[in-house]
Image 1 (tube, rainbow, N blue to C red):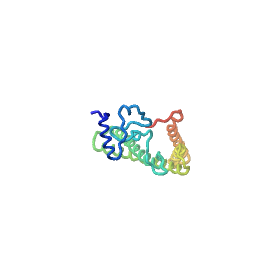
Image 2 (cartoon, rainbow, N blue to C red; image 1 turned 90 degrees about the vertical axis):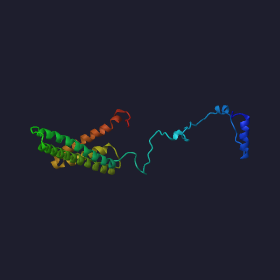
Image 3 (cartoon, helix red, strand yellow; image 1 turned 120 degrees about the vertical axis):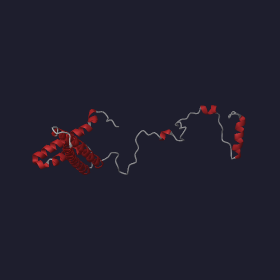
Image 4 (cartoon, one colour; image 1 turned 90 degrees about the horizontal axis):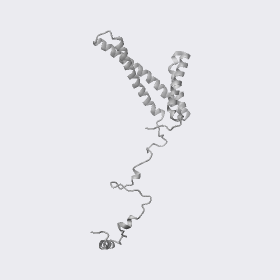
Length: 208
């Protein structure tokens, strides 16, 4: 049955007039030429505009006054933990190498296994303590300098690295302080240079 026939339109008009007036009716031919300016097609499954489901930029709900990037205080926990794990792994591998080298003349037995295990645990704990202490000093200096200056930039990184090297090597006297400061300055400077390499080349940094 044709919905556009006068009979069907009259029956709908009668029902519409019964409830307070009939709405105007248009045929498919008449509606085909109407431009849909400023409108996008709706999803056949969701009765919403798809433009609200796709965003060009990431949207985050942040507390009032919070930054979109983590500060040095938040990164301090990751830095210290990562350095401890890295030191323990490197120390364990170094201890295994030393244990195999020192006991190569011994047959595989329980005393040899115990000696290798002792070297692995001792070296792992030593390196984890060393790198963890350096990371702790660097994080503390970084947070203090950031709060004192009220800014977060590469100058904080270089200053924190230099002070960390100076304090860590302070038991060695003035010469040790100078060597530690130079080592910290060099390492933190290289890290800052790596972070700004894309900016120095004039290209935008890639983000993943």
